[in-house]
Image 1 (cartoon, rainbow, N blue to C red):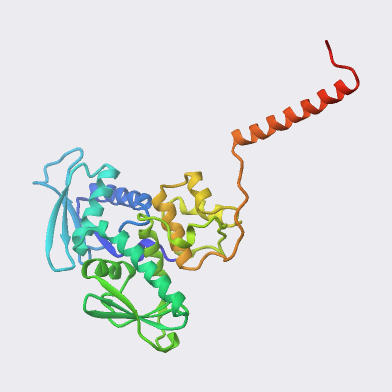
Image 2 (image 1 turned 90 degrees about the vertical axis):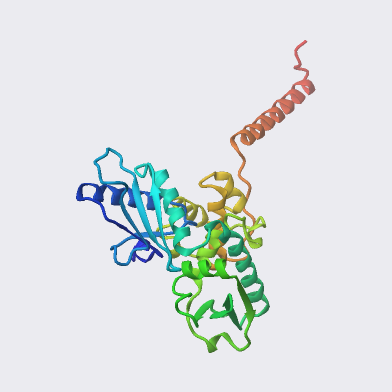
Length: 320
């Protein structure tokens, strides 16, 4: 199986003395494993093709915990320099990576969740209305792709913008987008699966909330293993385990507190738009909490005592 980090949209290179390079690369690998699924994904690479190069900050004077300098190459042709203070703390490095990703693509990542939710709602509504049609996706004033609603496919018209889900989402955030019926049958424009884009949009939309399809009390059961979850948030494996038997819905999963609400909603959004769930399942049986179970037992015990007392009175065995 391909390591998801091998195809991540952002590339980082480490240009440090040998004794520090391996330490920073191990730190980066640990940070990337722990990052939420809805943030920018990174891979380690060579300086020639990297979006950012990490160097020592200052004159190179030895220090126990030196600051780092990030030389960022924006995809709009501009260059940036960012000092990472306390880079040896995973939290500082994670925050720096988020900021660097914004500099690379040229817009704040915070603008993406609302657009992700709007796009998915538009896609869902059009797919319901036009179940076997082509949809034209335009970013700014450029036609970018033709989408097939029948099989959820994407036929790229602008391969640069539609190169990866991340570059397409970044372009939609920066320039705006429209999704409209284009006429004709979806089979007329064969393409690649749209699911990688739907998955990323679903994850990002989790910061806004859950899609309407997830608001009911119906149980959720996975059809199989959602392969796009590989390499994602560490809670995904536990969420998948709870969704394999159809005994849970959104409310019960949130109650388990396996991950922050945005992560759970993002994962469920991604699964539902990628059609990883079975349809028409009944609502799961509510599971009584420990206190509720104790209350039921106490009530039953109280009823037993009442019945015994009535029998004793009938038999004249009531004590004075």
